[in-house]
Image 1 (cartoon, rainbow, N blue to C red):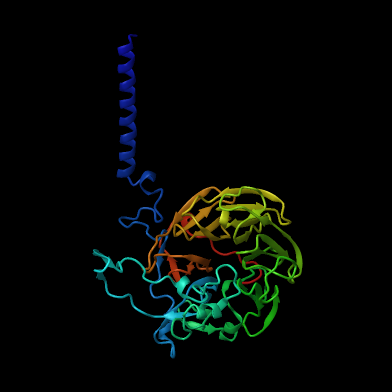
Image 2: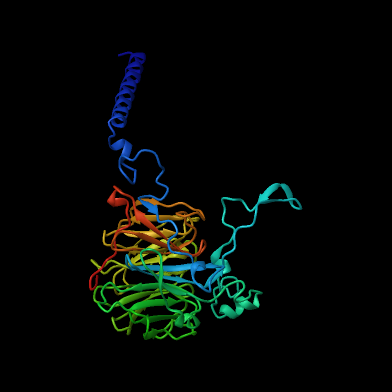
Length: 433
């Protein structure tokens, strides 16, 4: 065959292939086939954008603190953590209350640039994590300054913030049903709250990273069972932490602690809180790839099936995976900045779900690190996210986030007909219901 004949045949073959593939795509579209719905959170939905993935936002949940007698004019501070014990008992940690001040009216910045208007109506005008004690107190990562440093920086307690309602419990309708105010004075920066799924007594654990301790309380909050760590003293031995952040449990009740903002290790304890072992060394951020080297150990999760320990090496933008005794097994990267994974959980669906403060996404990975799905959008409006620092799912599948930047917490309800693979897996529950 002549060269021009070969070229003509090749062109005809490409055109035929494009025609067939185009007709197949059009046919799939016309009959509502997989090509049309395979990435939608709700298969077959018409319109919409999946702004909140497979969920609808539950508006006005929880009820604002300003609705409480004596708290008129106040609202939620930086939302540090949330834990849904059940659909009708949801724990929330926050760094005190902030004034409930409306955004100022938009105006021209005539002195600086007449063409600029501020504040922009679609943007938040207050960052709750900076405003809430001890956010802008100048103590940085040292943690020793606390509320006193916050006040020395010119902030006024009872005017710029109130150190109240640090531990709250809400029901499914958003009513405040418990407030553990008796512990407010003991806390300086409450960071994480959870109940072990393997504890029939359902003791409540609270990590305070600025006081370098973990508190264990009875289920009703009336009694402190024990404090692990030395209150107010940083360190790196069997009796000290240096700004611990998160914890998770093995099925036998033993647990591991991510230690932490300043610490660069994982610490393991038995079911009674007795020190067993620790591993980890200080790395060189932001791209250290050496096994067992950490920078900002800000998240930890245990796979109950294999007892592997997944560690969020936040400063190095990666997950490191170890066996239960600290032997390095594998790692994977979450992506370079602006990605900033704050925490993750391994759910009953066998997936690792992460919250990314940098992209404002909730992300699903399999346990080998393969990316599966993500959803979420930035914004101060209901359903928008800014600074997710805690997340939880109740046994009905409702999803909750605590946000340090927006402040407070939000509740999302699964959309009717949502693809189960897109929903954050329900929590692991073993010893209690």
